[in-house]
Amino acid sequence: MKNKKSTKLIPKGYYCYTRKNGEFIPCPYWSKDYTHDEQENGYCAYLGKGDWDINSECADEDVEVQSCYPDGTSSVRIEKYRDLPPTSLLWDQCKECNVKRGLGFWRELLLFLQYARFG
Image (cartoon, rainbow, N blue to C red; front, side, top):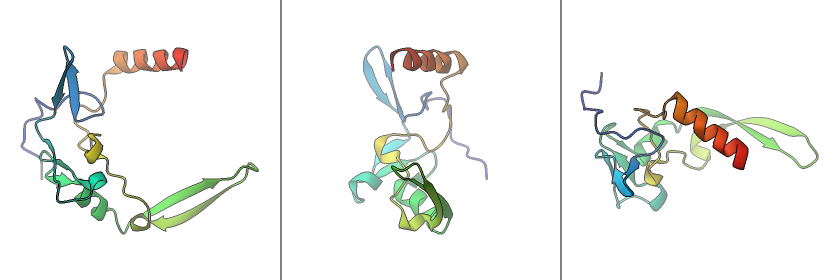
């Protein structure tokens, strides 16, 4: 089923907010539900889901976990998602909807070059 909600006000980028003229502007669909733990209380009305929903949907998925050791060796094992820390980051205003997620080619390139040059 296709989501019929407007994407017009969803900010560009990787976060559920933007800054304009120094002003912090949150996405109109983002909120917190304080009945959940601090790192699982983000909610996206566009998706109709919160961190708790996204994390529980993935509970039975198999996840490949790689461990790297100081001696240069590594190992790979399969674990159930439910046995790992939660990974939805709505609580920290990181997008889960993927709407306008990129910044556009030129802005992405500029950021890449800035980080490559200045670390």
